[in-house]
Length: 265
Image (cartoon, rainbow, N blue to C red):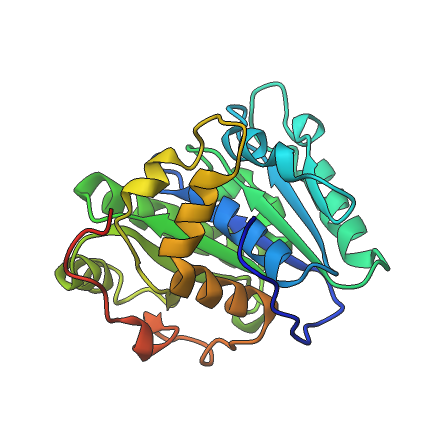
């Protein structure tokens, strides 16, 4: 069993969440899994859909066992072109239909593949939140700079007003120390986006997608990262509000800057 429910008053309007970065191996699928199962657990009356846009089907394969009438794992084949690029028209139609659904509280979570290019992924304009995971490696930081620059280029090209753009939150992932977190903060200080809470390194996350007949691995992850997924689902559900419109990198909450200095197994 996953953590117990938390019956909170959340909006009836559908919320669309995207986990994306052009760099692979930064934790997009893991965080999409944590987010989708987290909101499904806390809000059992809500409809949650996970759409896996990665042909490897990492997150959807892991979550198929949990699918039911309120937790849907969507086959994304119709949302991809033969080239593997997103079919923006079909994805946009799906988002529109989801938002217009009358089944009460709704969360739509997209897990995107490595190599995602904002200029070829215009459906992202319809998302409410875009979470951009990265770790402290030089390649991660460089790729994330390029990804964010292209996203801003897309917003400018489409003429989207700043206050109507999706909310972009960088998520430091696989953090060992406070200095790791500060390194990411310094590298993105001039970007007009949000800085989310850092997820410290967990060996258990390496086993998140291991095939097994029970949900033991996921239970361990949720137990060890409870503060993190509670914060993440608070943000997604609107229980925690973002602190205004950033004119430079803006921490979501200063209370979330304290990170463990040792690895937790």
